[in-house]
Image 1 (cartoon, helix red, strand yellow):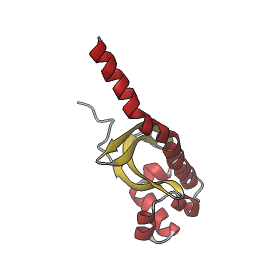
Image 2 (tube, rainbow, N blue to C red; image 1 turned 30 degrees about the vertical axis):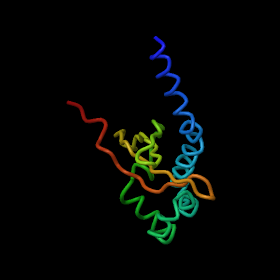
Image 3 (cartoon, rainbow, N blue to C red; image 1 turned 120 degrees about the vertical axis):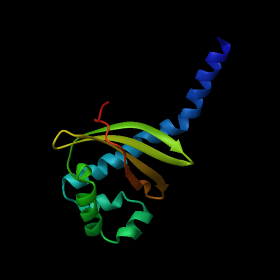
Image 4 (spheres, rainbow, N blue to C red; image 1 turned 60 degrees about the vertical axis):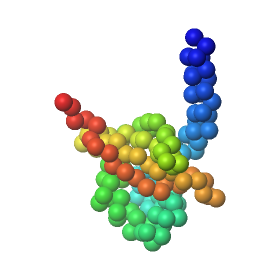
Length: 133
């Protein structure tokens, strides 16, 4: 019993730093998606990390990439935040998005903390969650 309690307490304590980041990270992702919904690519670009900004150069280039490569992010019907995980020293926020056709998608957002706050450094599209056996 004592060992089980120790494991539970240790798990809770270790998750505190991650839990403290959840709201600001989720707000960054939601704010970027809101900007996409408003076709405000300049605002959406502010939530991208310096690396992403260097890669795409302009909000217009960035917006075109999102429209073509991530249409479910550009025009989601529903957005659900899932778990925040630390993998190899990086924070990854899992997000489930339902597109306009009703299809579900899982994406992992790699987040970095900058002087401007949390920013999105990468988005990885994961295997389709709605495919069953």
